[in-house]
Structure formats: C-alpha cells, structure tokens
Length: 419
Image 1 (cartoon, helix red, strand yellow):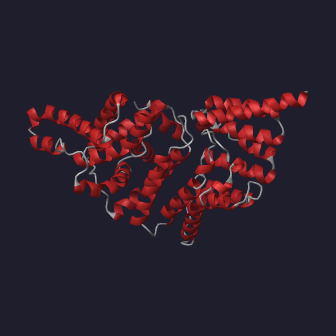
Image 2 (cartoon, rainbow, N blue to C red):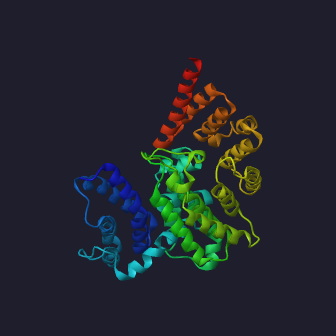
C-alpha cells in the first residue's frame, strides 16, 4: 500500500509531463488541463490500493478518455468523429509511441512558450506556466506572487480562457517569436527552480523534481539560444544554488541555514560549471539580473565560510540588482548583506523601511530576517518574538520547525543566563 505522501509526490512529478503530452495530442490546452486534473483526482483515490505498473500511461489514458467523453458529447451536432479517434491511443499501447518519444524532450519547453504567449499579460503567463510546468497549486503560486489566492485563481482562469480563444498551437515558436516571449519564459523557469529549491509549503525543504526539471529546461533553452547571456546566467544561477542542496538539510530533513552548512557537502562540479557559465555570460557585455544573481551565488560558493565571504562585493551587486529588477525579496537580501557589512543595527533599519510593503504582509520572510538580525544584535527577547511570528506565517513545515527551534534555543539560553 503506497503512502499518501508517496502518491502526492508522484502525481506532482507526473502532472506537468502528462499535461504537456495531452495538450500536444489535442491542441487544446484548457481542455487538456481540465482532463488531466480529473485524471489526477481519480488517481489520488484509486492508487491508494496500489500503484499501476505504468503510472504516467495510466494518467494519459484516463485524461484521454475524459477528453473523448467531452468530444463525443459534441459529435452529435458537430460530427467530429475523426478527432474522437485521434485523441486516444490504442488500449494496449501503454508506452509513448515512437514519434511521441521524440517529442517528449521538448514538450515541457513547448508548454513554457505556449503559456508565455504575447496574448497573455506577463503575470498571467508566469502564473499559468507555474501551474502547468511546475505543477504548483493555486495557493502556492499566490504565495510566490505575494497575492491572495482568490486573485491568483481568477488570473489563471482568465489566462486559460485567453489561450482557448486564441487557438495558440502547441509547438515551439519560431526564433523571432521565441525572442518576444523569452523574458517571461526565463522568469517562469527561475520561479519553478526556486520552488524546487525552497518549497513554499509541505513537509520538505526541497522539491528535487521541480529543481531538476527547471535546470533541464534551462539547458534545453540554452541549446536553442546559446548566445543569449541571460539564459546562460540563469543556468549558472541554478547550478550554483543547487550545488548547496545536500547541505541544506540535516539527517532528519531539518533545515540547515547557509551559515551553519557543512561546505564540504557542496557539489564542487556544479560550482565549477556555474562559475564557468557566469564568467562566460558576463564576458558578453550585456549584463542582466540573472547574471548578477549568479555572480552573488558564485561569491557565496567560493567562500570558505560566512565570515570570509566577500560581503562588500555582494552588497554592491545587490545595489545593481535593485536598479535592474526591484522586488521586496531582493530588498530583504540586500538588507542582510548591508548588515554583514555595516552591522545588524544598520541592517534592521533597512528591514524596517520594508515593513509597510503590502507584498510582504502575508510572508514570513520579513519577520525571519528581523529575528536573525535582532539575534545578532543581542536582543534575545525581540528575536524570540519575531522567530515565533515568522513560524506562524511559514507554510513550509521544515522552515516553520527551524524557526520555532531557533526561538526555543534562545529562550533556553535566556533561562540559563538568569540562573
């Protein structure tokens, strides 16, 4: 009997791949997504008694049957029998057909570009692609955008309706069209990777499947446009960041912050590749935000410890980043770097300037940074209060437990000091 979490992880991994194949077969993204969602619901119930031999093929068959049922209901008045036949592969065909196996490598990237069509606004394109490619829930996407879940649900629904009405084909666009969609596509892959490296919800720190898929798609994108320095910069950023993954969790899956990580566990091959890529990107002379973030990641990865990290250079790079692509999360990161250069009290002043940013109101990040800096400044009681407040807002269980543990340790130290 499979565990519910095992089923959930498997469905999260398979959903984007099944959607991509189904959308390519039908040419109707909105209908395909509805059918795949029904197949996932069915699987969540049926697989409790045991997993099928070919889970992906099972989902494809169920989704195809759902689509067939929809089309058959229209056949009476539209006589589209030929489409009905073409939607479903033969019953005994479990694996992908040979020609479909050739398509599979590009399906995810095709899905990214389709969802990033110019007929959609950039926020809608990114949200829809996170749903389709990343397999994120509406709630997870809303937290990534720092907006209410209801707002995000409406945004995704409108995006699906736009794609249905526009008749966007499921195919890789020509190079000129790809260029028009590239910024949105890069941002999507960046957010998918971030969700894989630091999951917004659930019991685990990482979602390795998402991070690996984002890296794979970034590599494929670089093959299509090898001279684009921002694509190279994004791949470098992913590799340099993912290099630390093995050190980010302890023996029981608990979160280990950067300054406490065993750097011997960092993937030196990934660091070497990432460093080479960012140097290559920067040498092209067209510097963008992904290249700058990769340069920050390289400075972290090349340092022997937190204390020997080149914080002045990191602070300067964050200043450059803020001029390129300002965001509250970047501002928080800059405040941490500012504190490492000028002291925690100076860093706290930077953090307080962000306290009224509505985009951070529902996020735990602001209080987590406050707590960290208050702890460094020697304000134990203030740090405890903000660690606990941050834990109350955290939706990832491992991160919540880490914040509560920091608060408990400080409280124990306070009791010991008063004895």
